[in-house]
Image (cartoon, rainbow, N blue to C red; front, side):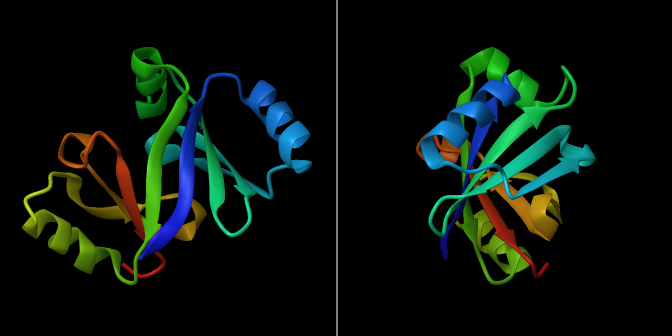
Length: 132
């Protein structure tokens, strides 16, 4: 298991993209609409770990609700696993609440699931894999 990306919820995508361009000297290498999650993702390469900017597409999306409650900023840490279904069952078996009934399709062609931050020291954790 390794850190795959850091998800950051943003309220003003253009301002944040301009900031990252000034800091890193780079534009996002990929942008993707994930309709099922109500977001547009913007991916940056930060030396082997991706930074994923999360832009809400509607006021009722999870990212919009997160920003209203917490403000923009760190949303989640994502960890790469070999088979997301295996880790879904393993994490549940540890007594950690997972969000959803099963892994689902996420951004970047990955299968994903999240562990509830209440059970993970306040950090929303995503687990992702190309293999279901």
